[in-house]
Image (cartoon, rainbow, N blue to C red):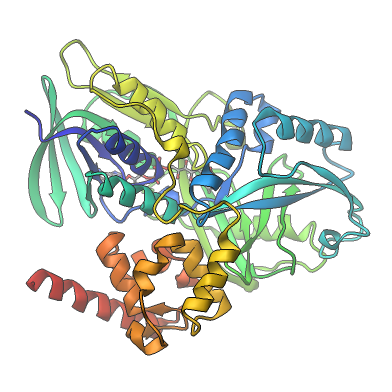
Length: 500
Ligand code: FAD
């Protein structure tokens, strides 16, 4: 008998989403992540849950419809991690004509079931607050709906939920070899320097941009599809405007660039699309990409955005299914699941492509495909909140007010951050604390030992980076001294736990 029904390589959104779904259907599941959860592409996205207005131009109606419907499923199931977001699309007289924008937005409004999100409206930018930060030449525009998500926390909470449904989550554990031994897979793992061997009845390769490497070198099987690795970079600058809408700017090269309110007082601008070669672990925004993004934003904003204004920059690499499109921007964003199994052999399912937005549907499709080999229960995730998400989709303000009542020493900003991160589980963290001192050491203005301990015990955090960049985005505000203190605290806590 195999140790697990299903082993999944890759703790990004696709691996974690499949692990959660599978565990909830009664399978014994092992999720293997070589680094931290969401340390790959799934923490480097633009963080939109969107249908992808631009994909309408390449007639990707199936993908757009599925993603549009999925926006509201996610908003309902993770009301803490997500929020509806209104986008301003200025009409540019030299680019797509207004009738084309109107038609695209009409389709966007009507292709996928829309119940929570408001529809599109036309705006006179010369008289609307969203026109104020823009150059005077932009007079007409549209405002439409999509959503926002904390990408890395979405991954982590899928893994937390999977673990609560008995999945085994192994971070800092790398698959180094896999062999098909008839009806099961034998997997060799490098777990923090220790060699381990486990067996599973089925294997999923959800290694994102490492997927091809896993296929060729660890599974030693020929790739079943062409993929292309595409790098996308983002820059973060101080808030460029006061209102809470995002902008979608059309560029002369046919691409689009977003400018999005980010982490209270910042603006996130992205992205680029560049063919990538090299190690997907270390992509970086190049000087050319930074210049490109500053230029794209400066073409619309009244005050130019300059490279010396950068607070932060990051880059991620997508693994896209190569459908033969010549330009990176035109490659399909559809996911493709390839299932390889000859009679009597343990199956291998490989994930190609995908989006954060559609991860839950991808997981459902994966399990439907695997149902021929494993005894899987019925789909269940469409109406199941993620941990802490068991409150109404528009309930963040009420929960924040409640948090400030219960823990009056929290600032408004920190209370909202905590509610957005933990939802109804905040009670488990702050408990009956009555004053700041009850929460132990503080690392910067917001992060406390109590929260860090919770992240270590319940959310697989092990290093300062895990806490500052993937369990939160506090890396944007915590200084070097607080970061060093946090690292010391986490090391000491880990050795205390190991000694117990
Ligand atoms: P990853 O998140 O990369 O996860 C793969 C994991 O596998 C990694 O953590 C890696 O460490 C692990 N791994 C690899 N090899 C091994 C091994 N041998 N052993 C163990 N573990 C291993 N989608 C949206 O819906 N909305 C957006 O706004 C959006 N914006 C994007 C912007 C950019 C710039 C990019 C690049 C992508 C964007 N996407 C967006 C797409 C989305 O981010 C990706 O489709 C998604 O994150 C891919 O998840 P994944 O789980 O397949 O891969």
